[in-house]
Length: 163
Image (tube, rainbow, N blue to C red; front, side, top):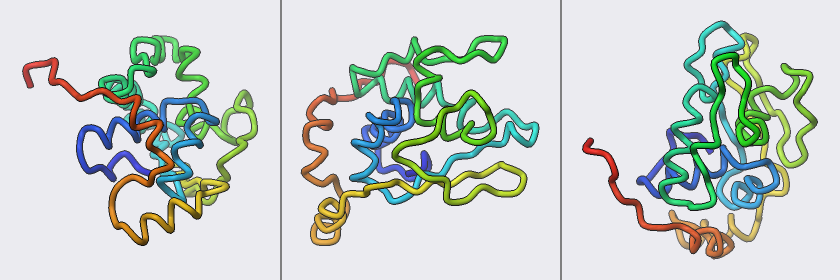
């Protein structure tokens, strides 16, 4: 998954949910969507406009469709300390894996590639659902039935701002 691989607002929200949820919850969805997760980690090269900087926006989009995501609880304070929700998120943990000693080993994702300047990181999704891959091969784009329970928790997106 990558935040640029999107079909519509609801799909962006689902990918946001994957990235801002804890690893175990994220993996339960991600294993039906992708083989790899790509993230931008430019802050390790001194530029702070990476996926972690954009992640509160991802949480807001996810929360606009999935009521279990509370975007107001997903932030980093002025001192650079993440909220508990951010600290538990898949994105935060992928971002800091092997670069921040406080990050615990990953369970469901394996580092596949990190550029020498640490600006791009790619993680292999472990235990990818072969059943979902077979469904997609037969039916084309869309969500496999294994995601029905997650999709049923979504609510219709409503524009709340004037833009």
